[in-house]
Length: 130
Image 1 (spheres, rainbow, N blue to C red):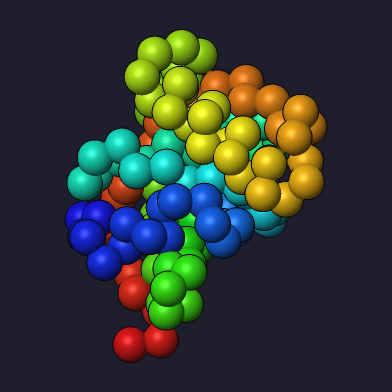
Image 2 (image 1 turned 90 degrees about the vertical axis):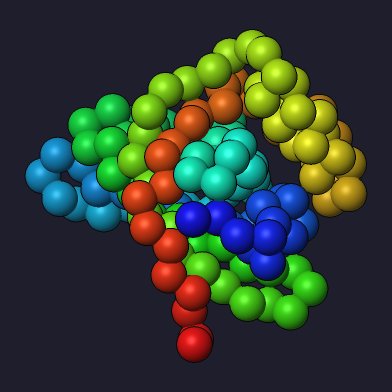
């Protein structure tokens, strides 16, 4: 599902947008700094400080994420579903390092704190504008 041409959009250079809904269907949209490639059917989102998003995901595990390739600005919508949170291990460590690099490039060193790598199953992918 996640193809090589999508890989640059999963490097954290361009922020992504996530849309969630609570149990009553009320939407919430927020910008996230990192959508991380796990494998061709999974991504990890950085759980930093998104209380409303996390609350919504706990009530309704489905979400949508828009990712943007910084090389050509191509965009994709990913329909995703929460599976689990990881607070240690290889994925968490890689995301933590990448988040620090993102923070350093934006003058925000020490501000971003990764609480968990939230793993999502990619249910569908739609390229936008094609």
